[in-house]
Image (tube, rainbow, N blue to C red; front, side):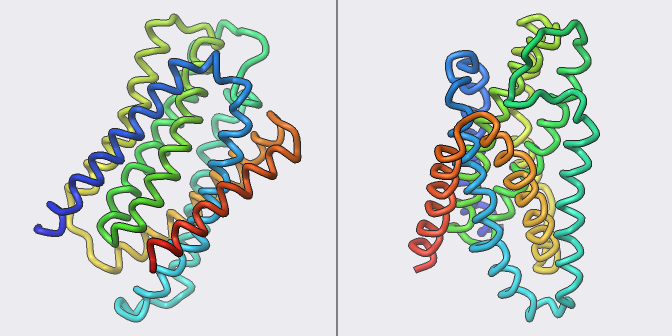
Length: 252
C-alpha cells in the first residue's frame, strides 16, 4: 500500500499529461497536419526501443523469481502483437492513410469505430503507465514518454477522422474528450487490483508485443507515407536513441 501511494503522484501526472497531449493535438489537428510524419517517426523510435532496452531486460530480471518458463512470456508477447494487429485491421476500412481523409464521407459510424479503437489501446497504455511505475520509477518515466507521444498522434487522428467521416463538430469534440480520458482510466485501473511478480512478467510481455506493433506496424509506416524517407529515418533514429540514452542514464 505504501508503494502504491508513492507511485500515485507520478502515475497521475503522466496520465494527465497523456490526457493533455490527446486533447491539445486534436484541437490543433488542422494546423499540425504537415508535421504529423515527424511526430509519428519520433514516437515509433520510442515504441520500438522501449521493449528492447527496458521491458525485455526487466522480464529477464523477474523470471528467476517467479520460476516461469521463458517460452510463456514469449508467447504472451506474440499475443500482444497480434492483439493490436487485430484491433487495427478490424477497423482498417475506417482508417485513413497519413492520419487524414482526402475526401469527406457521410458515414459518421466510420469515425466512431476508429475512435473506439484509439480508446481501447489508450486504456491499455494508461494501464502500462501504472504497472511500469509499480516496477520502478525509471521504467515508468520511459513508458510515460512513449505513451504521451503516441497519444498526441491519436488525438490528431481522432478529430480528423470524426470530422471527415461526416460527424458534427460537437460529436467530434466529445469523442476526442473520451479518447483523452482513456489512458487516465487505464492508469486508475492499475491501482484497483493487487498484482504479483508473475502478473508483472506477463503484463510486460504483452506490452512488448503491443508496443512493437504500434511502432513497427502503425507509426513507422505512417511516418514514411507522410514525410520524406530521410526525414522519417532521422527522427525515428532520434526517438530510438533518446530512449536508449535516457534508459541508460536512469538505470545508472
